[in-house]
Length: 162
Image (tube, rainbow, N blue to C red; front, side, top):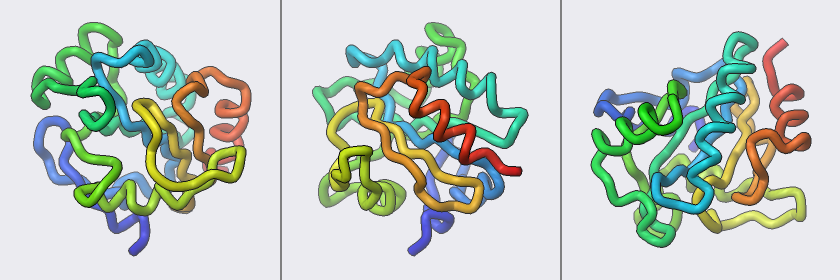
């Protein structure tokens, strides 16, 4: 399977496929509303604002697998993100990123290595995966890497379409 084949539902329930983002550099992030890292929504929105006109998007996938930090419904999550952080980048229905019910998208992403060479399960909320405009995973950034981290920003700039 290719990452392009992954399908999911947007936060409003609309069917979407990763292929709809072909040609864009994409930052896939597992997000949560009640986590100590929830403040990263603001930085992710800034990245989206700064680079979307250059062929970039952020895709937020709520997940409740880490500390029960995403207990809300799709409607509650959408409202929280919009009101609290002004999120305008695409959000999707809650999924699982690890385990036997792991979404197929994260099956593919889990094979990506971080800067220390470690691949495998997502370790916590707000882990980030950078996918090139050609559909290849070109970077994995763990939770502690803030959206404005120079290494992440440089990777995004390198992944932008020509």
